[in-house]
Image 1 (cartoon, rainbow, N blue to C red):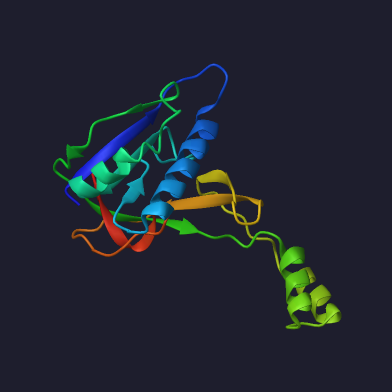
Image 2 (cartoon, rainbow, N blue to C red; image 1 turned 90 degrees about the vertical axis):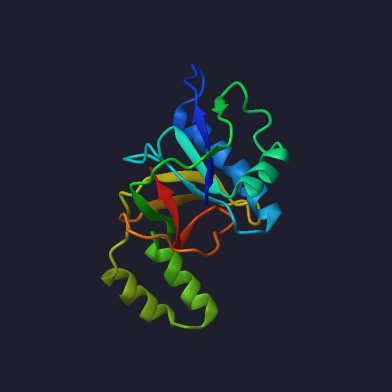
Length: 184
């Protein structure tokens, strides 16, 4: 992971930054899924209450060039600035950037359990009364599933800084709970 590329969302009068980042990220997800390589990771350098306005791609020079050659970000030239692929500078450490899935609707989960035959309706009603709905204060990107059309929130968690890198593969979102990206 010796190279990176930054994409910065530009200020726009009509569209807010989170909306543009979600659209850009959805397009990136499609491009990464089409590559099926798992060799490009992502991070959000301005990560805070939101993912921020910068998306950073991490990988080897060749992988980033191959991804860039697909022109996956075509159509976003008015909304973002795409920097050239560059070598990674001195790093402060390595970290994971992973997805956190939140089970946020107890009633829906219990209906599913009844439908699958795991619980009776009476058991499900008792459990719903006991379960508190989970929520998360993590930053997220609002996305739409292409497989079922459902809207969902992709919650993102930047892990703690680590002193050494961990190699592996990334998901089609460019995320991994184990594989690290350089942090600088």
